[in-house]
Length: 208
Image 1: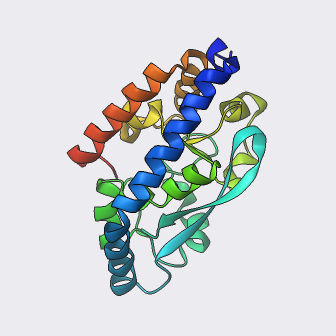
Image 2: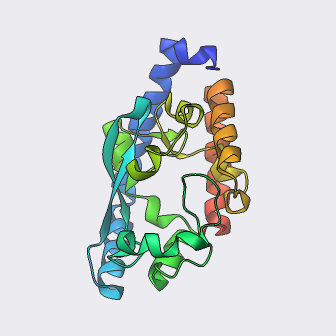
């Protein structure tokens, strides 16, 4: 199941070194953009600028991460009322025209700008630049043992699912399959390939 590269301390050190150097540099360079986006959220929708994202990391360990808030402030309380409109099978929730998303949030999601605060989680070590996406705590409790295998490694900001038509993937098992494929085939070269494809996807504005 696991690529033998996960047992190579040199390759793991290189992966972590890339995470630290890249996240520190990005946080420094993007700090003006962070300020602009935070003000955009605050002035276009009542509520905090950041969404506190309670997710699960490697081996089922919960941690707190952040996103720029792209939905109305009470979005979590409204989620149950939208359950019938879920377009994703399994424990995850996905809705193309989610009414909870604000106009500014829709624009940020198009270019994945709402995800930028997760760079801080990469610097801390809770996340990696590349790895399976971390699920919400409320979603993880509904995972099967098979689905929990996707968290054998540190979760990431981007992954194979992100660059393989995430907006077209509606079966959670397909998502899990891609995550397990990443874990099985992981190498530094694969990470670099995913990062390059992620940059192209971001600039194309293909997010939702």
